[in-house]
Length: 507
Image 1 (cartoon, one colour):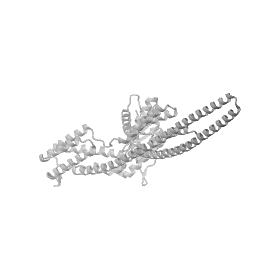
Image 2: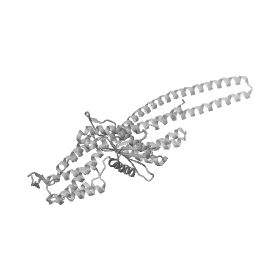
Image 3: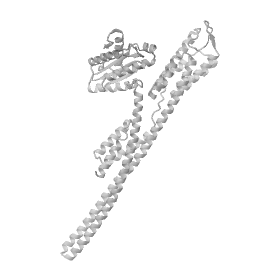
């Protein structure tokens, strides 16, 4: 393989290194790859190379957007109004209003939570100065306890609204942390504690735990960001080094052409001298001229070949070094790509069952809807619910419930094809997207899945469990959106649960 072919091959390999998640960079690399393959002029390659260098610098200097998601302005304003409506002593009124206003203005969720924590601390202080005795038992309860007496119904109603909003906010934040962690296992205990919180005191304790966990998660995210920035910085430096080597080898090639042109001119000059000697018809002069010319030619050719040999060896060493650099970058890029893929799997997959989680489903359903519109292929949706799941959990414990979920997910995966999408939508609900499948095929799938679950032989320590599923089946229509199709399948599932024996309802 000649040197030019080697350089082209190496350059094309370089454009494959990034395989970037950044769409602009991916498009730029694709253009550069085609330009090299098509043998475009140097000016076009220089232009694309400059664009690539500028884009890499931009990626290095501009880190990813902060993963902290603030409350929407509408939600934050409503929350602030809920805080301001609380009936507290005048001595706490101004401070409480100030904290509510600051929380509404805070741009990041961690800042909002800090202000919310200050609100809870202020309410705890207020409650310590105003307590009542419960008439029926004599038990002393905080003024702000959700189970306090109903002397002031309006105050209790305002407090209930505030606590409900706070609980909803914390639930949203915990769910967001689950997505970033890729698993709900770290927050399971916190959700249980949150569901049992019924007062300012208990909900405030959960808030403290959420803030600590969020701070820890922020540290992990920042560490990953720094790692990515470091990798991009190193890759940029190495790409600059590779560019310098390629330029050097190209320059060597241009100098080789110049030497060849010089040799050609020298040979032509000597041939002309010999030609003139032939015209003289003097054999002695001709003999001496030819001998002298051959000596000159031999010396020039030998010098040219020696220079080319040395230059060739130097170019080979440069290309070997370039190949090592490319392999090193390929290895580092492969490692980073693997880490990114693993992170995506954690975010998109349900850790208990191994199928897609709700976020994964919502990403895939958009893809499948686009595919349906593009090629006009049928697409059906099956909404699955585990019957009597709460009863199983309450009677036999969460381990038995987890076993049921895992088995149901496994049954759906085995029955589905590789092109289909199986997802745990939430709790004991699953959704199956059946590609290239009309409503008749989807009904067959649902009935078969129900039959397999009924015959699976579930048991808990030898005690049989009554496990079954209900399926709502629908085919996606031309005017459907992912929301409308899912809603229709969900309604069909409730019909199947309540109205049919085979637990399958088609709509």
